[in-house]
Image 1: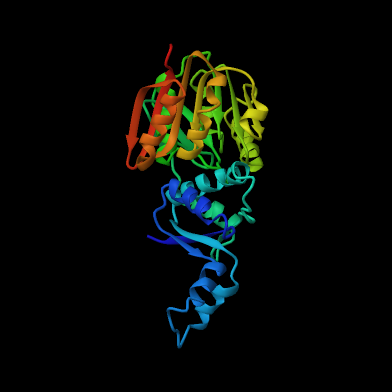
Image 2 (image 1 turned 180 degrees about the vertical axis):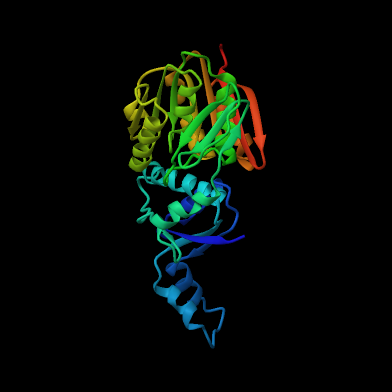
Length: 317
């Protein structure tokens, strides 16, 4: 398998926050390059160095970065999309921390070129009982009753191949009622909003802090003929949305779900279904605890590989 190296540029002050975010997206191995840390290491008087490689000495003036490796295939592209889609939220959640430029560098590959190179790996995917996600450049065979979701995800997260997305879609299929209103938090490519509409939802609102994601979600809604029922807005949930919804879905990461628990009930009525995904197995208990503390009871739980998705409702329902 071929691998692609990705660097994310940040600051010394933000290393712990940013590296924790990357790890929460399922990556276990990261490499940190930090000039301050290396200079502190060199100034350690307890160790005597008679030779230091020139390449290593370049670290004395390097820009702080966190490097990680992703497979050069559709899963890797999904993983990168998930990380990229939520990176801007780190700045909003940590206003007192200098996060640096938070820009990505894909080693020896232009990001725009890499964003299309993975397409050779992306083929129609069946999810749940009747959902078939089909790239817009492919054709697919459908059975009676199948619901086809046509997608061109671009650089936004959400193709249906990642476990977090497929788990969330399966729970939507099982819990959505025809005529429901849907709120999709962290909409990415718009796949969850669009799937909900194709399954019979009355309307869907997708929210994302990434302007590119919102643009791509609009385009995908048009591809599927549901743009008249879909609304996609860029910005923070609490600033943009005030309504209550029948079904709310959030395919994000554990820490964001935990913070979301403080406000999500404002968008729920007594019968609202709340579906969360993007939970790495190690953080499942933390998320379940936060949901329960917010007055929500767990009604379903699905697992796939190292990922978990849950469905819940208000406790007093």
